[in-house]
Length: 110
Length: 116
Image 1 (cartoon, chains in turn orange, cyan):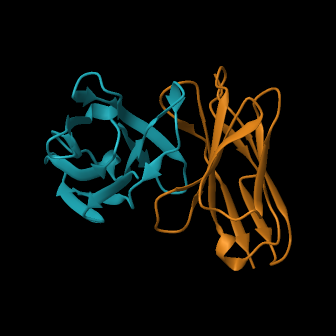
Image 2 (image 1 turned 45 degrees about the vertical axis):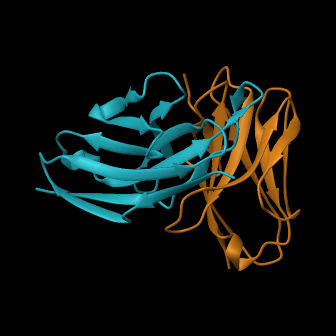
Image 3 (image 1 turned 90 degrees about the horizontal axis):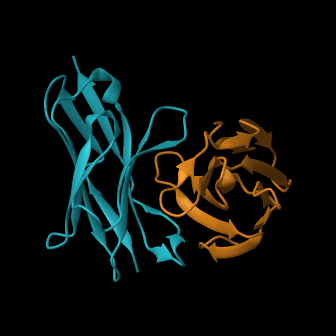
């Protein structure tokens, strides 16, 4: 069973650009959550998707948006990138209790 | 609102010594509590979880944690540290959200070093 997978693993963008990150959940999981982990910090919750709808949202601006597809995979989009958006972006999937994390996408904004 | 405080950003122990990583939480509702481990340049791996069943929770790799409501604590322990335990450990809290787990709120993490 492949766990949670994310692509790409690394990404370099410049300020003002847009980026799309992708996540495939663990088999049987229907809920996907996204987190941002800045260097030296704990992960911060961005939003959670369930049944293709955004169910919860953390304290992130509208520049951060997402989508969940019928096969439960998900995308995170960030528009108008800022230097402060440089971080490790983690996807987690769940079905009931316990969220399982992917390896993350490391985004560097120059 | 829910929050998590991890006491000590860096803990160093000798190989074979007891590991104790401290976590205190704040929650207005009965919480779900978790410990995750993160190795360098990797994602987070679930070590163990408390979801209102037994207060002493056993996890992977010999770790366990005890939920103490009176102390609002969920400290992580391991009787004997191995070199492979060196990593960063995160405590997290969430609440039940419609039968499934709501968003996780993480502490700032504790980096564990193990000396030979």
